[in-house]
Image 1 (cartoon, rainbow, N blue to C red):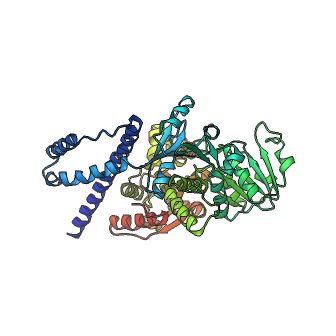
Image 2: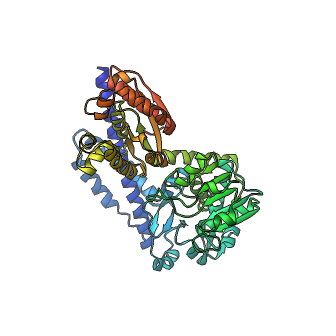
Image 3: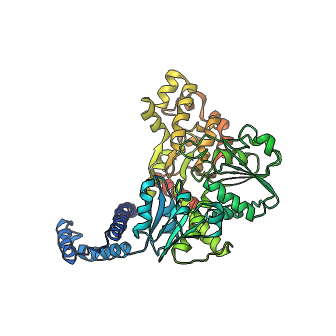
Length: 510
C-alpha cells in the first residue's frame, strides 16, 4: 500500500510540473498582451468575452475538474490582468536567444514585468519614442546608441560613453551604466583587489570601458588594453605587459558555442595573481580553468551580470540616486540569485564506473527537474549509427574514444542538461575541459562487486578492478561532488536517496 502511495505522489509531482509549464506559458502571453495594449493605446477588456470563456472552459473540461473550472479560471484571469498591468521593462538587443536577464529580474523583483526586446538599428528611434516600456537594459550592440539618445546620464555612463540601463522619467530619458557596479561586485566576491596593481584588459568594447572605469575607481596602478588592432596586440603583449598582475577578458573569445578557445599563454606572465572573465556562458571558461590550474584567483561573469541587473532594478523601481557602495544586504540578494541561476544554467553531469547507475539516476533527476536527459552512449549511437561496444569491437578503443570526445564536447558545452557519461570519459585529457566548463560534476561510486560487465567489452576483457584502478583518481580529480553508495535491495530507494542528494547540493531544484 505504501508503494502505491509513493507512486501516486510521483504522479502528482509530474502533473504539477506540467501545470506549471502551461501556467508559465500563459502568464508570459499575458505580459505580451499588456505590451500590445500599451502600444495600441487601448485596454480592450471585454467582460462578455470573459463570461463566454468560462462556459467554453466548463464544456471542454473533464468530468472530475469541471465543477472547479470557473473558480480556477477566475483566479487565473485576475492574475493575467494583474500581470498585464505591471510596468513593463526589458532587455534591448539585436538578437538575444540566450539571455538570462528576464530570469534575473523576475527573481529579484515582482514590481514590474520584464521581457526580451529585439530590434534592428532602424527601429530604435521608434522604440525610444513609443512609451510602451518604462525603460530597459541595453546590451551589445546598442550601448553607445542608447547613450546618444539619453537626455541625462550618470557619471559612469558619461565617462564611458556607454549606457546599459535606460529609464523614461516623465519628459526626459535617463541613462545609466551599471556594468561597472557589476564588475566591482565581481571583484569583491572573488576577493580580488586591483589597487596598486598592473592590470591587462583584453578587448576594447563597451564592457572594457566599464571595466576600465571600475579599475580606475579601485586604484589600479596601470591599465593596459590589448586587442587585434591596438598598439598592444596579441603578438607583443608579452613584451609590453609581461609583468601584469591581473588580467581581465572582455572579449567574446571562449563564449558558447566556441568554448574551446582562449587568447593567452598564462605561463608568460610570471607576476600574475588573478584572472577575471566577463563571459558567463560557460561558467568555467578555458581561460579561467587554466588560471585555476595555476592556483590563481578567478572570477566568472555571472556575478557581474547579476550585480549590474540588481542596480538597474533599483532604477526601474523609481530610485534616482543609487549608491555605488555594496552593502551586505545587497550582496545577500545578489548571491542568492547567482546560486539559483547557477543551479539552472549548469548541467548536472554524472561520471563513474560502467554499471554504477548513472543512466537510471540521470533519468530520475531529469524527471524530477523537467530537464532533458542525455546519455552520452545513446547520443553516440545516434551520431555514428552504431553503439560504443560495436565501435570498440570493429575499430578499436582509440577510434571509439576519439568519437566519444566529439559527442561529449557537443553536449557538455550546453546548459541545463542532465548528462550521464560513459565510464571511460575520464581516460582522455581532451575531455577534462568540456566536463568542467558548464557542469556540476558528480562522481557516483558503487561497490565493484555489483557492477556488471554485460554489454561492456572493456569491462569484460580487462576486468572491472583493473579499470577502476586506472580511473579512480581521475574521477575524484574531475568531480565537484563524490557520492558513495552501497548495494540497494530496492532500485527506487537508491534513486530517491541519490537524486535528493544531488539536487540539494546544487541548490534544491525540484
